[in-house]
Length: 321
Image 1 (cartoon, rainbow, N blue to C red):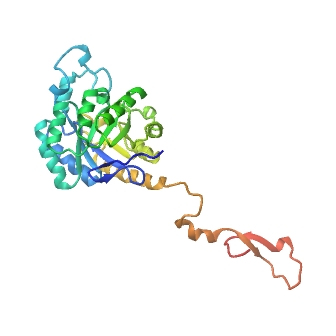
Image 2: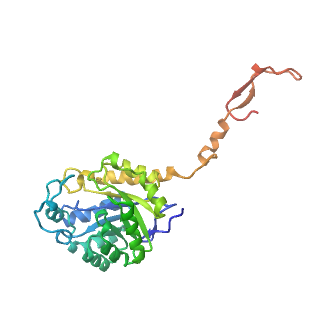
Image 3: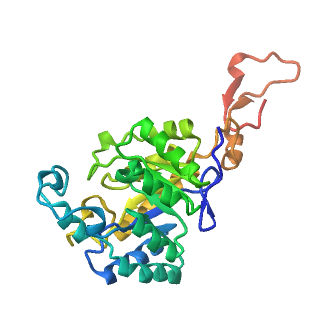
């Protein structure tokens, strides 16, 4: 089943194109605009196709509450109050104009994941070229409708979602005006164990929904993105940081600048290596054909003489019979 055309900022994404690699800044700017700007340079220099932000402030995403429901129970941030975590990780609304201007200046596409209606309004004022819906927001139907109504390309992340929730989300955005929709397989575990990555799901999502499909990966390293590319993922999203040991909020499952460069290279190589089903000699094999075996006489045989079996051998190259 063919997937529909999808592109971001003029770059086609899907069958016949190298994977579209998104460098996710998240909260790894550590509350410092200069670091956020530097991460845009990191994404560009590593060869990523886009840099992505998360557009929220603590007060737009949660309440400043000590109630048990507002305390993280698992993962890296166990015991943290949601408000304090998001206050640390937020990309302030006031930064966005500078971030988008920086991305334009260095020549890399920038877009974001909005977490409420005010975030969409802000991003629209900056002519954001595409939108990502984060996994936890996949069930926020009013937000989906708001984003879809922009008519911009829309990526839906499916972490934790059931088939019914994915179906409702993609039907909602299509009905609300989205004409270009892609899905990302995602495991919302931080970091995600390899055994939970389940990247076989990528092909199932693509077959079920006939949409461009990729992965938002939270494992450590680049093994999963590379393997996902070989399985047909056309979008790869991975968190980035300025380097290990700085204490960035998502550092444990983020790539350093050099690791990002290596991932971009490896994913592109995996894409090229996957190729197409081929049961015939390839161009690189053309010279090797002459090294196939053929039959040669190994003894001098007089005219009219009988040819003994021991006088004929199967040998390389292919210049004999």
